[in-house]
Length: 316
Image (cartoon, rainbow, N blue to C red):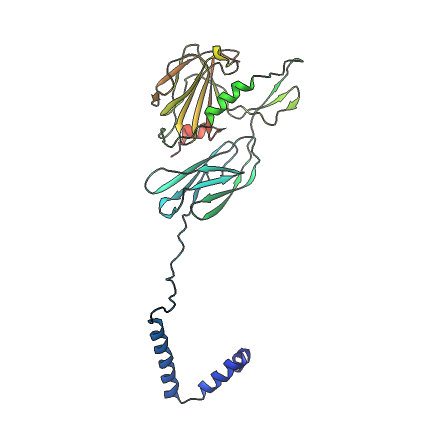
């Protein structure tokens, strides 16, 4: 008690000393009077009222896969009950929208590619309050090819062609048209997988990777939509698509798109709504193709991701 009294301020120490010297019945009466006065004052008009204490409601985000690797699509989900603003996820200076997938939750899809840097990645989830989620983006080995080009044949192509195709890949529409696992777009054997890297004349092309999956098939064999979609773009070799040849671009909704290039025939038109399994064209060798095959590219918010997890696991 003496140690406690020494730590009190001098005026308060005198008051406590006086109070402790009162008779027991009088100290109780004094305490009762003090409590009663506090109650009366709190009920006076204009008296300051302390706001009720309520816990802050934060929508806890969940991430899948928890151990992503280069090329994976990352799914971020938050409960709808804790959202107070248009939710989004930010990574590497880009903001990705979250879409309400049902009454209970919102979901965002974050693309990664072979040219991203593996290691620590921090996702900023904004639902009215900001949460930081730290993941370890794992490295992944991709096959390499060595291409030797004669002098003066560096493979330069028209920027206009790629600008027109890239504009399609940036489409983000609110309606989700895919459902469950994706179907295989062609029955031919796979001749080149996603993510293959290249050396040109012995120099590693740091910004190049194979942005899709190639299927070898007979000329005229069917190419189908792997999921529900809207036909968002069509191009023909005769209209200047020297690299892509005849191609179809499908919008699956919510930033998910896919492309089918080197086609022989196209059997859909812009604006068509297609179902999973519906024919959209046939395999050909138009554009910069050395033989009949289908190049299937799959994109999330404009970046080519590995479609294999989408085919075998699916995304909500």
